[in-house]
Structures are given as structure tokens and as C-alpha cells.
Image (tube, rainbow, N blue to C red; front, side):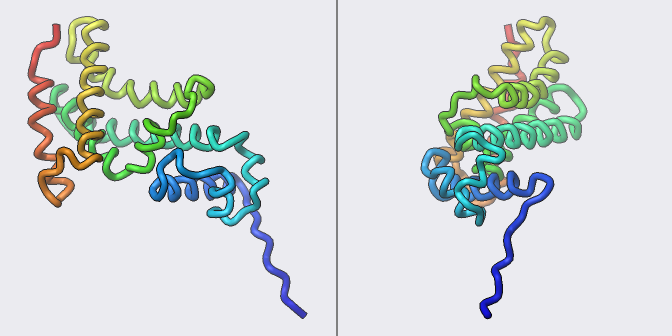
Length: 199
């Protein structure tokens, strides 16, 4: 008698976790637009119908991964800032943490900024992005005299860090084989921006 194959069951969100893990593996292999929800299902070891218990489609799966990525980014930039003393140092360390996040979590970074999904359909995505941005905005509010200047400083700092992260991910800024040393090479660029008065 042939033994029955065990039926894989998921409890307490395990199915969602398995699908997100599978999707991130596929992102690393094919990019966020290069795979289907069916592929993620097969990679997770479940039927192609299983994901619909939690996600309407692939876009909804990617939206949840974006929320996860924003939460990681928020935590890492906040922790980095809390480890510094002055406001300028806090902003500098938050910027370096952004660069580190983009390198160490390249799969999340790719989904967050290159998935092409309509983020306006997902309030949770917008909320998680706002929370991540609020880390740098909160620091800028301590640095600048007005809310307008603080927001401009925060957006500019984000744009600079994001631009450096993107160029670095494309190999345009690689100066050393050691990732941490490479990040330190970029610190003076961030510091130069932060040392300039914003008006």
C-alpha cells in the first residue's frame, strides 16, 4: 500500500509568509515584474488556488511585501538615528542606514520602487511609506526653523540617499569589494548636503 503524502497545512498566517518568501526569491531571480502568482504558489509548495485565501492577485501580494519593506526601513533608519548624538549625525546615520537597507534588502527595495503596482489602491502601502519617511522628517523638523524648510530638507535628503542607493545597486558607485567600507566612502556626500543651510 502506497503511503499517503502528508497534506501541507498552514496556520496563523503561515501561508502568507510562505508566499511572500517565495515571491522574494523570485524577485531576486527575475525582478518584481518577471514572475506570476502561479509561480509563487508553486515555489511555496501550494496549489495555484491557495494564494486567493489572502491575496486578490499578484499586485496585492507585492503590496504587502512593500509594507513589510517599509517597516524594515523604518526600524533600521530609526535605530541608526537613535545611535547618534546630534541632529546632523542622526540624519547622516539614517541616510547610511537607507543605503545599507537598499544593499542588504535589495529584493524589498526592488519591489518597493520597481514593481509598477498602483500604490494608490492600497492605503496600507501609503501608510507604511509615510511612517518610514516620518523618521527623516522628524529629524529635519528638529534641524530646520519652519515646517516648510523641514519638509524640503527631508525630501531632498531622501532623494539624495535614494539616488545614491540606486546608482550603487547598478554598480555605478562601487569603489571597494567591502560593502561597509563602500558605505563609508559615501558618507562625505551625505554629510556635505547636511552641512549646507537649507533656504
